[in-house]
Image 1 (cartoon, rainbow, N blue to C red):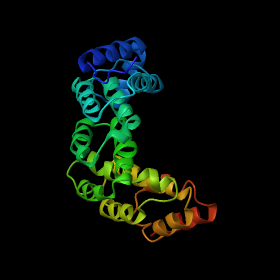
Image 2 (image 1 turned 90 degrees about the vertical axis):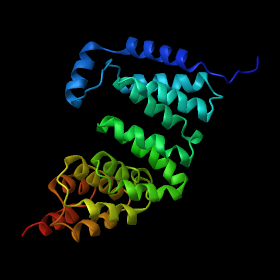
Image 3 (image 1 turned 45 degrees about the vertical axis):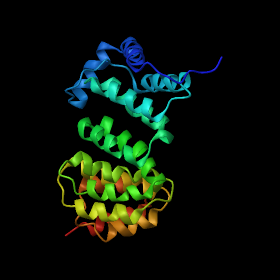
Image 4 (image 1 turned 180 degrees about the vertical axis):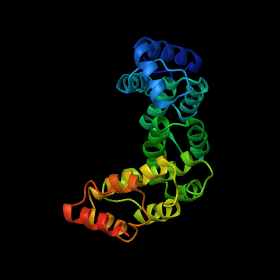
Length: 246
């Protein structure tokens, strides 16, 4: 039987919502909401369980179009429910090939409305980052994000560079430029993100990160240093820490 690509988005969203509620745990929901200091409703479904639902949606709708994906994203995200928003991010990861540069406006809105690392990090690294890797012209968007007033958007600019750097490639020069702009920031989530990107870059290119840190050691926060030096050799770590001393 030929597959009918038309999707009843409201019906599908109701089905997804029921499944997420069924997978939830009141105890997990309470703990998660407190841990994240979240203002959203939480059903208490685990991230692996939510990913399973997202995979099921994709498998059952193999002819999903870009417009249908965006309609589904909008409908799922509209409710202030953490589990639904996590699933939205997972769907975007799975269906990344459907996205185009013009969809950055939607991604930016989702990032601005996320207000937590639990949503921001996946959207930034696994969606925006991979889309930018495919469409390098989006680097100008990251340049704008890197100086945005919203620290979650600045964090997103950093994390959008993470995946290719982790693999041993990527645009370290752009990351360095962003990080230099943010080295004097006191926001924990910015300092942590700089350290995270440096740490993962160092797993493939420790000497690059070592030299970067050594030349900036007195200016780099302790939060950043603690993450960044983890993959370095004992000698390199000692050199960086010594360079921080007055």
